[in-house]
Image 1 (cartoon, chains in turn brown, cyan):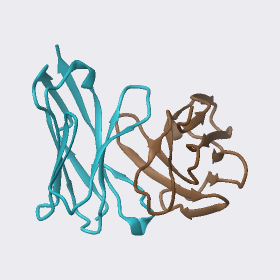
Image 2: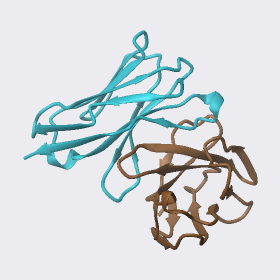
Image 3: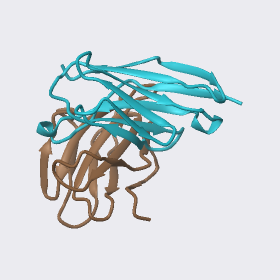
Length: 114
Length: 113
């Protein structure tokens, strides 16, 4: 399977817990984007990363959210002390190189905060 | 200036009809306009995309029409099928922003048999 992989597909967390969402880009892709989709809404950009670098985090909430894309392993979006408003579908997309417009999305992680 | 407005919010057509979904943007720096198709519980799938140097692009039953002066673009689905029932999102990006996508609000399309 050469597509973008995300896990877990579904994640349930209680208020105050931490959520970790993982994304493995397509083979050969080194650029990762995270988007959030609230119920009945469109997708909103959160953060753009390359290996070991955060390029653009202008869409990330200032507190509780962080992202990384280490030299080895998947990209991780971390949400600390989750609140009910964090319940959403989180999608990861990857592209081949800087300036490559085509982004390919993973199946998403659906986070539910109880 | 970063917004992309999409309409209609929902659309119902009969099989064989030609649904048309419209989008308008504000930022003239946008230089790439893709359309994504999303089925329930799935991630968005890239359908077709256009650059502002052309006015129309066709891929199979899907056509994008682009009007640079009006800052509008639209998706036409020829000979629509029930399997086309999905949510469609337009988007826009510009290279200087790292190609991050700004999405429209989405159109829920239903094609009746």
